[in-house]
Amino acid sequence: MSTTRNILLTETERSLAASFPASFHWGAATASYQIEGATREDGRGPSIWDAFSETPGKVYQGHTGEVAADHYHRMAEDVALMAKLGLDSYRFSIAWPRILPKGTGAINEKGLDFYDRLVDALLAHQIQPYVTLYHWDLPLTLHQRGGWLSRETAFAFADYAEIVARRLGDRVKHWITLNEPWCSAYLGYAVGVHAPGMQDRQAAVNAGHHLLLAHGLAVPRVRAASPDCKLGLALNLGPRYPGDDRPETARDLDRADMFANRWLLDPLYRGSYPAQLFELMELDAPPIEEGDLTIISTPIDFLGLNYYTRAVVYGQEQPPHPDACKESNPADATYTAMQWEIFPQGLRDMLVRLHQEYHIPSLYITENGAAFNDTWNGGETISDPGRVSYLRDHIAAVADAIRDGAPVDGYFVWSLMDNFEWAYGYDKRFGIVYVDYESQQRVIKESGRWYAQHIAAFHDIHRPL
Ligand code: FCB
Image 1 (cartoon, protein in one colour):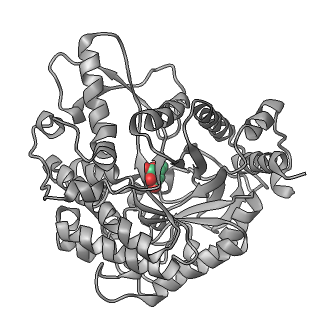
Image 2: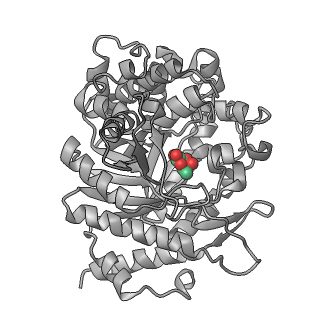
Image 3: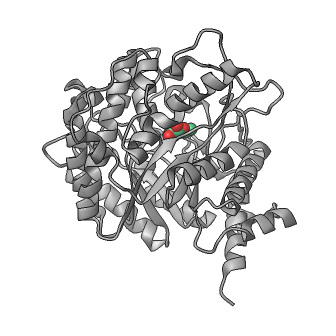
């Protein structure tokens, strides 16, 4: 196969592929605003990311998702590319403002038709769709009515989720309600580097609560409309490690972990926010109404883990807010173009922890990957050895986690192709496929070839005799 030319797996890599159970899934992930473009076509309404990226100074060099990777027009070609790579699963997200241009009310059939065709194209290639219902592109009208600060948005999300599940639920068997609500809430409402760009910590914890509520309200609605489906959500979690053995470090490590990981895990899996979190942040608790935590902790089938890096915590003399702990990574470590430390063991550790502490029955790595400064010389492929090792070493960490008992069912590379990397615009490339934005040509990188070979080796081993 031409995708797999030039790279041969080593013996160690072949045995890595062989160590995964036959039922394991291999895929790649994308998100609507990052790849689709066509933001004004076929009745799509504006989202908070259109408004944010059009605001001067918010996104690198004023980039927007208006064209992105033009996937809306190149969907068939992109699905063929996935098939060429040998993916058995594809995680993508639905743009809420394509389905309901104003967030609620009138349905835009053309929006549903697009995803309908995408699902059919995937299934025609034996690729299972994993559908994320919300990957950050909130309809702008809903933002103008309060966005995630309004409880109403949670109910609007559940209505929208049901509309999508009714249309696609006969064929889609895996649903992810929300992508990284931590980022939507904290980066969007406290730090302001993501849409809608607010800078108010209290707003962030309130938004976080409404996002969780949206998830919980959507669960029964999707289940009812999509018989026999599996449902979960995707969280960005990052393990924290102590930088030294001072007692202040142990104290701050606990605070940092509470904020980065337990803030959302605990309400979802234990039905309560971590005791003291809001107090230690010197904020009010979010507006929790009776029954909310029961709704939020409605059992789900799997958890998606988005894993990129870890953080090392150093205690401060004065106890910090949980969201202001001192974190820094070793100077002698290896970093990606995002300046994220490459630390595969963190993936193993987090998977094992989710299994041991939260007893999660099924785990997926819904995102894992790396940005490097890839350049294309017009040739047939692109050399990205850093990404090849990143993927191999993280896949090996997943194998370790499975060996240590974690019930991991699949792995999705972030990302299938280069795309609009939020505030970094097109400056950061995460794809295993290169996108030349001028011509919109796709070129499989060596990491894509490596991944294709890895998947092929996995199938060779599991092929029935
Ligand atoms: C995650 C996002 C994804 C992508 C990666 C690099 O936080 O879910 O859309 O931007 O980071």
